Length: 213
Ligand code: ADP
Ligand code: ADP
Ligand code: ZN
Image 1: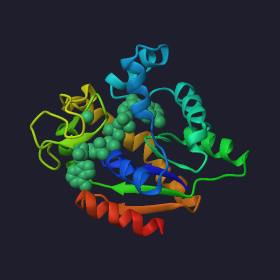
Image 2: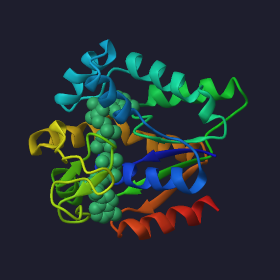
Image 3: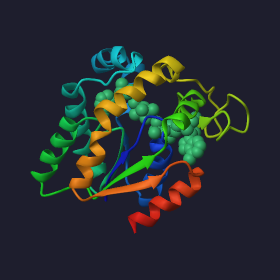
């Protein structure tokens, strides 16, 4: 099963993608996580991506597309995958479609998690992440049991640099301009499924598993 998660930054794509990956035993492929891992390791790709990410802009397609296509050609992606944060532009979607069609493959579902902008801002500014295992929490909506400490691995939680209020506003504007057109794109492809993302995480997940049946 090949799934794409669509939705604004902070809509809950990562939260849901992690659960989908577990439920269907397919890898969770997050371009944001791959960029952050590269930044942490100081790779050339990481250094290039950092200036865009810190500014709330998209990393250029020429860096992003090859990295993603390379990732999904790895062996663990043979049974499918859930893409989180890719594609974010029409050229990314076109490149993905072209690469898949060469192998007679196609995306099965594009799941759009719908959340209004007002809700997005408080989700992103309250987000806390574990730099060690990648778990995600929210100060109000999904707190860790000990404040500031990851339940899964015990590491100290951090706020992502790009989750500061000013950068959040920029990222939302970038979303509306460059990523939102993908909703119409995948509707035309006949694979779009829309989910109400304002529900509790477990109810969002139940709605997703319902459409994946
Ligand atoms: P969120 O889900 O909160 O938007 P991500 O972790 O998906 O955050 O992305 C963080 C940042 O990484 C983006 O703002 C962008 O700079 C970069 N990024 C991630 N995926 C892509 C992509 N497909 N194309 C371009 N930039 C990307
Ligand atoms: P994305 O990957 O789309 O950027 P995340 O999954 O990281 O979004 O979620 C953004 C923030 O909102 C996180 O702090 C997360 O814990 C919280 N969150 C996710 N889903 C929900 C939900 N359904 N209701 C309330 N908060 C949520
Ligand atoms: Zn952790």
